[in-house]
Amino acid sequence: MSMKTHQTLLELERAILAPNNRANTDFLMNILTPDFLEIGASGTRYTRANIIEHLRDKPGFDGPRSVENFFAKPLSEDTWIVNYRIPETTTQRTSIWQKRSGEWKMRFHQGTVEQKAKGLSH
Image 1 (spheres, rainbow, N blue to C red):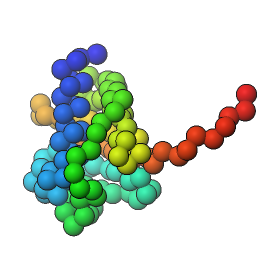
Image 2 (spheres, rainbow, N blue to C red):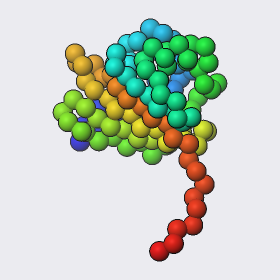
Image 3 (cartoon, helix red, strand yellow):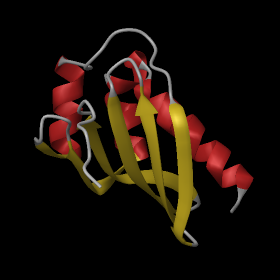
């Protein structure tokens, strides 16, 4: 695993979480692929155009967000999957990143609200 790629993707995920970037159309147009798809924590599906419009009007949260338990794994040479937790929103986040024309772009993202653990029977 490339530690450089791991660090780059962590920095890109943190950049997307910054409120000023979430409402910045130019930033989002540059970092999201044209065929981007998101499944939000609410279950709503968003295309790149949908999410840019949605976040421009309502960035989702104020202030910084922490990234915990960041994990990145290559799916191929130019495609990686990342997963992490945002404790402030108690969500798990998963993204697929692709390197296109030498730059990392987000192709897919899903946010899942954590449920309280229920007892498991063995």
